[in-house]
Length: 335
Image 1 (tube, rainbow, N blue to C red):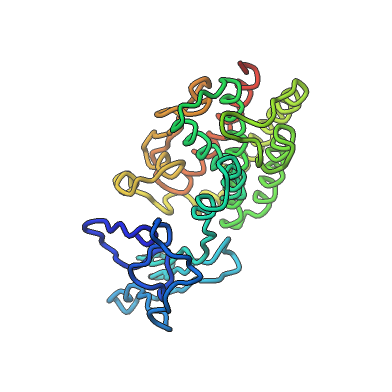
Image 2: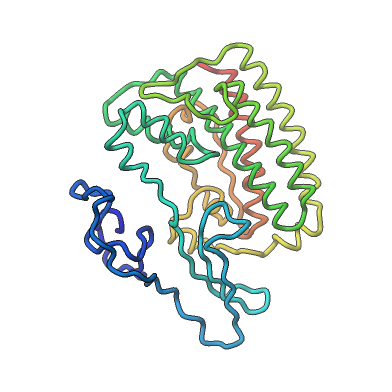
């Protein structure tokens, strides 16, 4: 809506999401008819006009502001929490304080293969997933057939990124529940996934491997042997940490029944990933609509019925083991 001027019918909240409050009306940055932003018209107002929702009527509820800049935040974000004691009754938020303009940069300044490097850098953790989304979109649009070996290697790298992401989130869950020794141990094990990435791509981040039509480098025999050994090591170390994590009383008290996401809400808001799978929906694009090499790999979809924080942790734990199995299978069965 903000970037293209497409207004959904019946939109319940008409406030801006991305654009600042002083951005001129009827100027949509990503449209073809948009002018150079450096020559845009004068601001419509000098003051911030964004209206947060009003406080709840019950005077017993307090409002706790967080942000826009906060020491624990990865990037700017303004949250207002309506609380009754320790219970969060409602919340309002504003995000999109930072926008890098990658879409217009890719459209106007870069060649089609240069965009793979840009898409790698959309995210510092899941860069390969973004470049895979871009390259497969171009390949499908142009009817380019990618060799099965390259497709399988893409799937293996995506699972290495999944290990990196899930172990990061498991460590952060420990940190936010006061279990900092668990946080440090999960981050120690997470280093193994970065070693895998370094062996397979030449860098600790999974950058630079994708290009239109395939990948930039093949996997050597020694690379595959080292990766299998690291996968076996990680499986043992994760199991030891999980045994401790799930038997820690403090973890149970702070995660069971907390942060419930009802199945109906998860469905209506189109949640994806571990969030929706922990709310009873066994949905996974890798299994439902296989892409790159996932059609060649054994796939198991894990879901939980608890709808709470511990359920989401269990989904991530199970997916760590599944990712390791898929990496082993892929390396053993490369076309």
